[in-house]
Image (cartoon, rainbow, N blue to C red):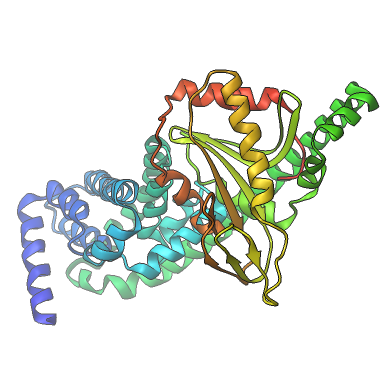
Length: 402
């Protein structure tokens, strides 16, 4: 098998020699052999005087970006099943996908740049970006910014090694380690920046809620409280569970409008909803749950604890949330799917059974579940914005979800 692989590599490298710049680009696009080898061989061709360094970098960058766009498309239109089955042919396995999904869900779209310099994650990070339908323009920009220095480094190292270009792994290790730690540092700084933005948003939402309460006065507040006794309890729910859901929803993509922590009013009904996502395939309301241990969803949708006795009915709030959203849309003559999701965020939650009315899942599967829903009433971009605006104008921020 090893001799067969070496034969393929030698054939491809001979092909690259004949095609020059185009060979570098096509070699990176089809990912038959790792990009480091293709770029280092391109550097060797520079050393031999057959091609120009900067043009080699340009063609290497174009090929590297196109290769990642291919992976992005696979993630977007094929999802995990396709990658788990065929990813080995482009050096991506299930472990790579799981690690990159965790990174993408935790740090959001900015990790598309920093993850390019980190082993295991750097190739597979395009998969969750595609699955989340991250805007292709933003994906391409961040990928290009990362591929440029990578191409420059390996073409340069191949050029300096000359005849010994095959020792690229040994020569590059010290540079790659520095890039990796730099990327980790940037990722940490980016995470701190996201936390800062979230704390500012939380403070702004709290101030807006305080201003609204002062403006409407105690009579209006009492009316809202009397309208639905469950709304106050709903608003109090959240904490770490809502934080986890809000983090996961950052990967929803530009086609989706994410509304965290809203009260929604329709007629005399008011509900505090932790998370609402409006997209081309419907309106999704997410109820964050923090139960630990065995959570068994029975035929009626009740969650059973380890003791076998029923815990709080997990679908009770979800039914109230669904009612107010459907009623709001109906009053305005809007036909759209309204989909409820119970998101169990505790790492020790073990889900079994099935709810007949709502999906029950964990945060890492949340965005994929939303994006994979097949709508009976698809929405155009203008309709998505109009529905999101309608929901925002119907109520106020609760500050429960951050």
